[in-house]
Length: 278
Figure (tube, rainbow, N blue to C red):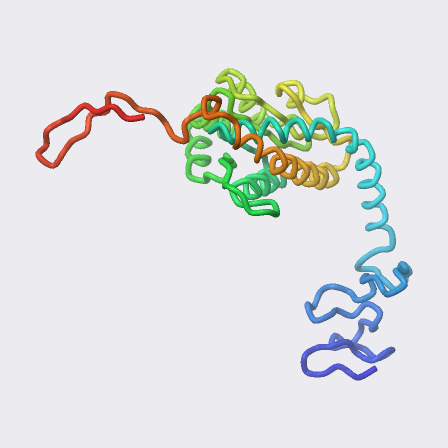
């Protein structure tokens, strides 16, 4: 094996790398961070704990994967729920409705991941779908938090943007966040359908929503990871149901935009005219 070149490539077996201490078994690759020993070889064998070195640890990954696997098994029971939600969401979005989503911290990032899949696409090209992450509106979020308090940052936006038959999806690992509970109450008061992605049930948010998907794990990171799995499955079911939803008779579909009647339009001569629009 060749000695390292100027590009910082892997040192020869047994010789120190550029840092003068790390053996080649854990030397960084071209990205300067990933130890080569953790990549799977052609035989798929697992590296020994000793080869990983003290910075990686011998059981952290194994423990995490064990926790993940334990929570994945009961998640399989959510298949019918996600299929039904996907179909319902597809029909409501096709009828002119929208999805409002919110979360805190890592759940906020996952909520935006969901809206990106709908406004953009999961895999196949299709019409954009209306989905709004309430926490992404930073000016409104901070203004509401400053003037009304943090528990109101989502509820006030639900009252502003939510319409009857829209869907409100709230994500929380604890299921106890005050701002999400307030949003659920506001949503139900205004006729929205409220769904929750939570950690283990029972929890307050699961009780506050019409329905919820509860991940049975005490570890917040595992809950968040399985919320992402559920997000992708939900979007897959939306895409499957969307062609039928878009083909629904026009009589069962809401207008694409708001309907206004009796609007006064100021013309160039400053004369007002009352017009009917639809």
